[in-house]
Structure formats: structure tokens, C-alpha cells
Image (tube, rainbow, N blue to C red):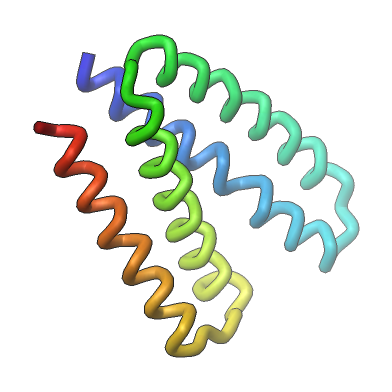
Length: 110
């Protein structure tokens, strides 16, 4: 049960992170394949969400964790791939998001 939760959670985070990255790249390159891959990624994301939510009753905890981890992941990609600049408020926001994930995870495991 826990292994499938982690597996589908990881797939959900990855597939939810791909479209924003590809859309930013599409705006630069105008390559239509990036839009197609983004749509496919969203479909896979919806499927993994449905698997997560049908196997678990803690939607109020799991969805925020997935959303925050996706946010952190996309922000890191923006910094590393697109050389986006961040300021102290961005760093604080990512820090608070990380703390929120930890606190939600602790409350889920109890």
C-alpha cells in the first residue's frame, strides 16, 4: 500500500512538473511537440491523481504535499535550467513550502 502511494506520488509530481517547464520552453522555441508532450503529461498526472485518491482517504493531506513538492520542483528547474533569478522572498517561500511538506508528512504518518 505505502509503496504504491510513493510510486504514484512520484509519478504525479513528475508529470505535474513537466507542463510548466515545457510551456516555458515552447514560448522560447515555438516547438509544437512541447505542447503535445505537456498535454500527455497532464493526462498521466490526472490518472495518477485518480489512483492516489482512490487508494487513500487522506486527500486533504496528500494533495497539498503533491502540490507543494511540484511547486518546489518547478522552481528548482526554473533556477537551474532557465537561469531565473530568485530573491529573498522566493527563498523564504520555498523554505516555508518545504516546512509545510514536512509538517503535513508528519501528520500523515501518525
